[in-house]
View 1 (cartoon, rainbow, N blue to C red):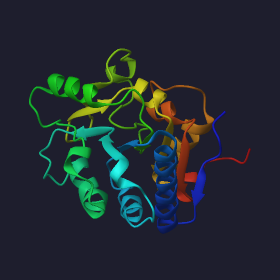
View 2 (tube, one colour):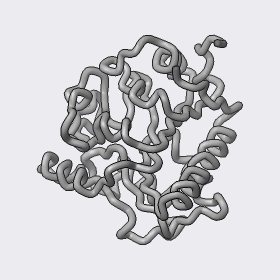
View 3 (cartoon, helix red, strand yellow):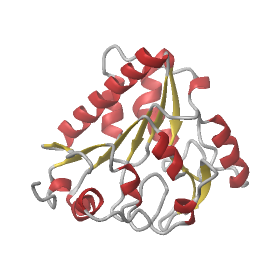
View 4 (cartoon, helix red, strand yellow):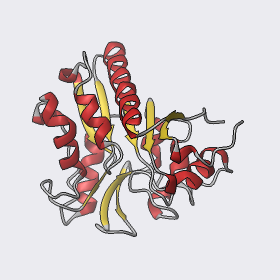
Length: 231
């Protein structure tokens, strides 16, 4: 049974709580293992949390390698790029050396080759994996009933999104399962029914891919929690 989510009163508190969670987990990973493999999510919801994380004290960024859970097939300068968002919100603010930031090259026309290169870059286990959830229950670029959900050998695969940009790269379920710590950050009343199904409903990851992360720490706002009945 998944733990109860952490529910924030508003967007500002959600960003603060998520930043504090990420900062603490990075510190713990570095203290225990001498480094931290941190994978970031894209989308609009985590951006304020990344901006807050950049201001968190005593985060040992010199021991952190940053990866991504998915990416759109756009150049790194494109407004739709997860990499660009993370750079603007967090990475440029903390002075992470370029060789510690591992961009998914989803803009490579040979996405199979790009996926294989990225899989080779990933560590055996991510220390901290940050995910989001869409209103259809997708996470990373694992969309309902997609072939990527049934992948058992590869860690990164090309994916198709039902909304543009259509072409993506995404981590696969095994990467989520092996991550030491997982957080899902999501917000908004439109997601409330899906949050309830993912966290309290029967196990249906083919229809609700975010269930792959339901044993992680969920950080949501009050509107997103509206359909969760008390235990």
